[in-house]
Length: 305
Image (cartoon, rainbow, N blue to C red):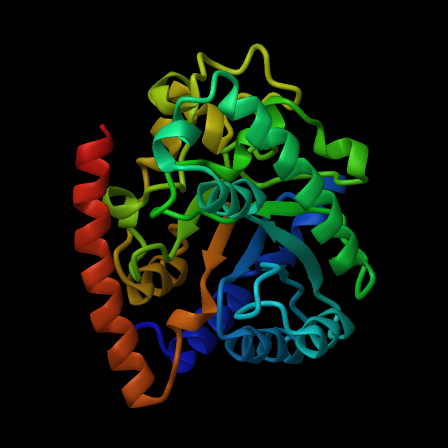
């Protein structure tokens, strides 16, 4: 069975045996190692599952990065403190554009809100105020050096919109995985869609640029923070070719590739720990619900494109 804690342990053990080192995302930004893996965890909900992952990693001397949302289903202060105390990095899983957009829709009729002349800029102004407030709330618990966008497929706005008008470096942030990693030589794996090849059902785990006309974005020439060449938001032919060299559907396929020494030297692996469980009922419920969401996201992508 895939997406169990047992499988997760086996994956880590295999990677360790193959000589990989592990860096937090902040460590990678500050000093990239030659043969290393970034374990990124998006704590969307069920933070207890993330704590299990953090403890397993700590037992093995592995450091990971955990991005917490500010909403009640993610923001558990005691868990945040414990994960940090285990030696892991904690970052802000920001979604301020979508949060503010939902608030504004309640204040203004949908038709009027969508027709505001400078709706995008106004939304970004409100969102950056929310971002600063929420970042400070998290920093009162633990140090925060990096951030990562939370994608909401049900909301038409993209949370990265803020960086068109504002610079997160001014908040003491050194990196954002969607903007600051060149994937020409780093392989990107994510369990989006409860599978490792879920690109067809990923709504937000990709770039914007000319492909997103709803944001009025024509490239990134006017952005305050410009995604580096080869990043997820600014993929190059080289980074696309490199990502297409490797295809995995299941965790067992990744493990077998590691045992055959067929994995690249550098990888970023994104986990959503709420999807991983040894308990039969939660495991089945997550499987069924994720398959339902995958169908919905597939058709949503078709409609938006």
